[in-house]
Image (tube, rainbow, N blue to C red; front, side):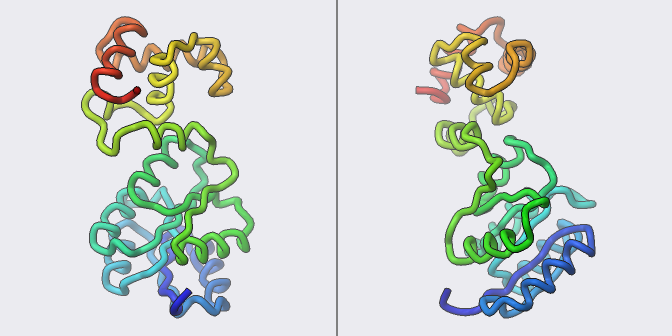
Length: 215
């Protein structure tokens, strides 16, 4: 790391902010630590202080950290954002990474690992917690950066289901792949059909192929 980094901690819980701040202030790679408790504060602090590294909570009082990340990176494209959240949700992970975050960890991660992760993203690396599953990475790899309508209405899990059915998988095969029950897949499939305005899996697969969602 060429020079010490300016770190911004974004969280609406002061105990979380101050706990991380105390740890970071002892790190030789950190030059200063700022705090923010909302989306608006985060955007203002990041731009004003030219933050190099940002620990970003997802759930904030006036919005979410994903939107804050997108706004910050539009103004400060070299900033490195690590998302910290209680939500173990593949769709949130995918949205955060699509917004430009370089990492994603759950808040119950050991504090020392969080500091290590911040140092990693500050150095240009990427950090994904152990519970970030292959479904997220598969969907991110296959899906276009900007999904055409009506596919932009689908969640990451629903996009994965479309990919699997387009490859000819049965409901049982998709359920095994995603480690859920067939009933869950049937329910999610119905939601997909409604969003795509199709009546069956063949129409959904053809629509996905025509839109370039699957190969």
